[in-house]
Image 1 (tube, rainbow, N blue to C red):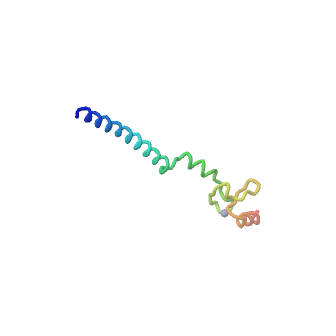
Image 2: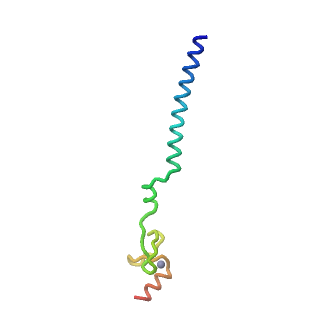
Image 3: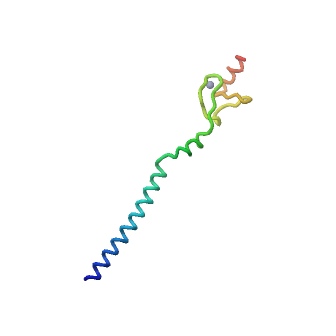
Length: 84
Ligand SMILES: [Zn+2]
């Protein structure tokens, strides 16, 4: 009876430590997946440029580059070239 009680106590302690470690890992995993990493967001966003015609800011990848001058669309590129 005594050894059985000791065995149950040891088993409970082992289960407690395993659950604690599992909960900590699960919580860390949840935080990494659900909270946005500000550093990663900046890298994903990429550099921003300004449309020379309407001053709207957009990602450099989406902008039209005309000899180092950026436009948000072809229409604004044509309008800007007409004005100069
Ligand atoms: Zn524009």
